[in-house]
Amino acid sequence: MKFRRSDVQRQAHAIPQLKFDKQALTSYAGLVLFQQFFTNLNLKARLRTCFRHQAAGKVFGRATLFLQLIVHLLLGFRDLRDCRAYRDDPLVLRTLGLERLPDVATLSRMLKSADPRSAENLRRLMRELIFERLAILGLARLTLDFDGSVLSTRRRAEGTAVGFNKKRKGERSYYPLFCTIAQTGQVLDFLHRSGNVHDSNGARPFILACIEAVREVLPNTVIEVRMDSAFFSDEIIDALHAWRIDFTVSVPFERFLELKAVIESRRRWHRLNHMVSYFEIDWKPKCWEKSFRFVFIRTQAKQQRKEPIQLDLFVPHEYGYEFKVIVTNKTVKANTVVAYHEGRGAQEGIFGDLKTDCQMGYIPVRTWIGNQLYLLAGLFAHNLVREYQMAITPPQRNTSIQRTTLWAFEKIDTLRNTLLHRAGRLTRPQGVLTLTLNANAWLRHNMPRILKTLKNIKPAA
Image (tube, rainbow, N blue to C red):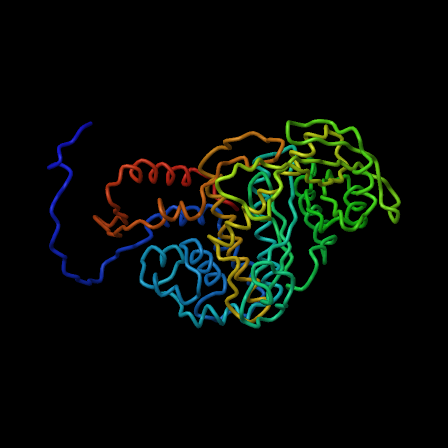
């Protein structure tokens, strides 16, 4: 449809005067959907059970304060003191079930006084929420990815240490180990560690504990594991093989010079595509008792030119080869093994979302358990947003070789801009609580549909 210029443009020179009045105005009208979503999950009551062992009598319960941290991160805030921005927001108060929000000092004291049992109970609840979704999906295969991520800080928090950090050399950090689920893009569990430990520190018992927890709930599901070269060890690989777990693990070249000789002496490579070729052998390091299937991959890549380049002179690209090796007990074809193992790069995307949208890299207090609880709040926020999207839409993909997520998830920042950060007004015409929003066509079409879908979901017990 074509418009006239006079129908589109207008003059606006006057600046309106500012007036402040006490009204039930909210800046986060989209939070009403998460209020219903939290009700479906019975989240408040389940959080209370995580803190039931601690002494009661506080004006603000620890479960309510932890739920505020989740909402705090959902709304896009980082520092604890940023809660002043929504102190008087009526919809935030209704979501938390409060008449007034606690002070920043109250949140800080809750984190500082947290105990290990509370953190363990929250980790258990996080796993339970994921297992409920996996039970509904009924997947034949479930893929677990394991890797660590550095959380840097300039403060001397309890348990931080100076370790390997390419981006912030010399800074103190934590280095937790995460277990993520490829099909849903959620964090199943994590192992909190200081920043000066190796990737494999405490990895074997943590990996087996995650597998055991999945098997207890999903006994008929085939479990797969993908890991990088930091977890290459006979202890971990023998344990996975003994537990009948399908695995692929990258092999570190620098530790096994024999592999270089194997590659150099190889004359026949099988082609995967025009850039990648491979061969495979059964092999084991000298100190191992059992041999496994090793897949050697050669990728043609452009070589970097470090000498000065004359700009007006055409310089053709020079190609060389990049090599990597994967050890596996899978019996499928080599191209399937390579594609499957490369799919673990999606875990780095999860870490990026956690650090960008859920403030995983922020260290708020000086205590070990307090920082662990804040990290848990970020993981809950991430997992709940994924669960929210899974609850309102059916799976959009089938299981692929690379084990990509079954849903095309929206980023949390996108949900904030399109849904959560919407102005609204709470009123009671004829005694009926009503949230009034701007007559935006997209909101008018989607919000009632989503709310109706959430109300039709049977609440958790």
